[in-house]
Image (tube, rainbow, N blue to C red; front, side, top):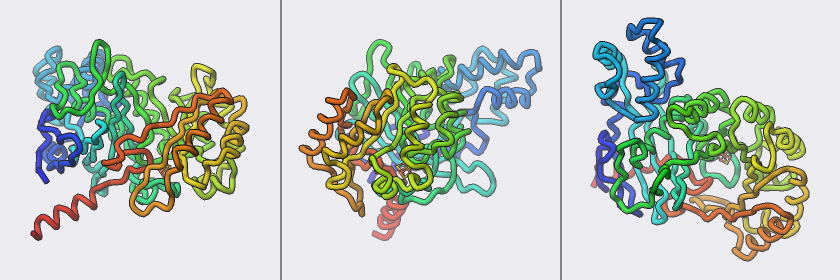
Length: 412
Ligand code: SF4
């Protein structure tokens, strides 16, 4: 195994199909609090503390914001429209560091998985390690971000659910995942993509990271305020500038927060459904015992802005002999009647110790045909990044494994 240091964003990348462990330096080398990932209001406070006069605060906040989120700079010295005195004062108290990349894996299909180390948020915190996954296609690149470290919901088909909840991620930590990905992929102005042959969409007006899905570790609606704030930063037109229509929040069904997500956040909604009756869903998604399917469907029907241009995505993992019969496909069609919807059929991605198998291809096709004939788009999501455990439901911190490997290497 190679050891690399990623303080330089253009450090050599993992060859396709390989894993590299990277010595994290971003946190250790940057003891000062980072401004990358902060809200406008937080940046204004930082500037005030740096001695900027009240009458200049608005303009300076906009400048700082633009340098951090549009240009992606990591050096105060490059902020040339700010005075030397302000730059020096900012640099004395703050950094522009991003979370360290502990490891990077590049799948044969171009999917990339990063394990990121977040610095501690306070004296009691030991820092956090989270995974995020980049899924490139020819015309778009989707970043799947995490909202929590671990998850409380224990969905029985999900690897992440086997990892206990450690804590919520802050808005800054959520946004930082986008910052790291954009930097690593050369997606900031003047950036260079890694030369490892992995697919990264490019061309006039094409961005390496064009879409965000909250489908990584955690239940985003159990971390509502931070997800809301992170989304406001990501979608700000003067910065990262990602359209809210290209940001999808996926929930296992936290019914009381669904309306607020539409009203306050305006993100696209995805529901991790996976079953059409309460008995089975109780087993697959135990949160269903609290918020039953009927209640969930009512919340979906009332989702603000719902319409043909703004459909809800229903995710349905295909589990052999469990939820994949034609009768269940017909039940799904009945259940979604009247809801502008898209159905994502997800072939189950196995992980070590999983109790399920993926449905046979025939069963998936039959299921898909029934749903399609009823008028729903029902793409079968091609599993991506299976070889690096980056596919849906496979995310889980690899840290323990990496540590074990490091120990073994030392013992050798
Ligand atoms: S599917 Fe989502 S909500 Fe369920 S255990 Fe996995 S990460 Fe948590």
